[in-house]
Amino acid sequence: MLDLTQIISYALALGIAAAIPGPGITALVARSVANGPSAAFAMLGGLMLGDLVYLSFAVFGLALIASSFSTLFVAIRWFSILYLLWLAWNFWTAKQHELTTSAPSRKDLFSASFSGLTITLGNPKTIAFYLALLPLVLDLDTVGFTTWATVLVPVTILVLLIVGGVFIIAAVGVRKALSSPKAQTRLHRGAAVAMASAAGTMVAREF
Image 1 (cartoon, one colour):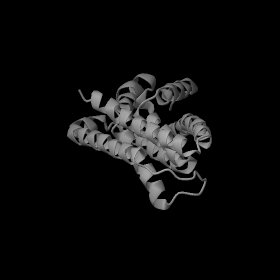
Image 2 (cartoon, rainbow, N blue to C red):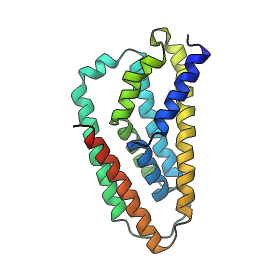
Image 3 (cartoon, helix red, strand yellow):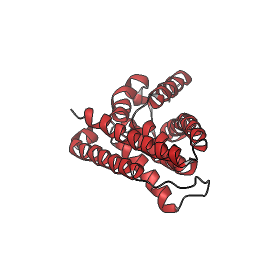
Image 4 (cartoon, rainbow, N blue to C red):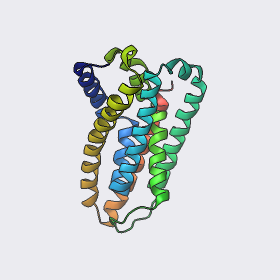
């Protein structure tokens, strides 16, 4: 069983790691600005799901299995890179339209959530945190299924929701100020550059 000090240490470490700009945060901000809060929170849900996958790997001793399937994780990372570049192209070529607060379709929400999941699964920063740094913060030998389910999962979701929510709210605030055609062009192309930059960051970490 984890004591309060370990739980607080984990929450702080996770919060700091999540707040450091990386592919996930970059893509989240870009999605917030380009598509609004609903799609952004759908993406955040995908990002959190990816974190929970790696948290489970660390807690249940699946790091060895993960290393055994290193080729699969490399493939996931490259798929994430290509997906980010595809999103960047879509944003760059997007047509200007009136910004609205209408609810996105289920397809849009699924796409946003799926992109968040793939970005997290392919993000070297996330992998390093859960499979290398987490054992230094928590005594994983004392963590069982109950602690994982009732403590670590809720804490992880809460921390990521707070950090991601702050970025989403800030980005949506910027979005509301950009309604003219020229501003929208800059908005979409800025999102495209952000997506491409996130992809470039992931490529650089491969070498």
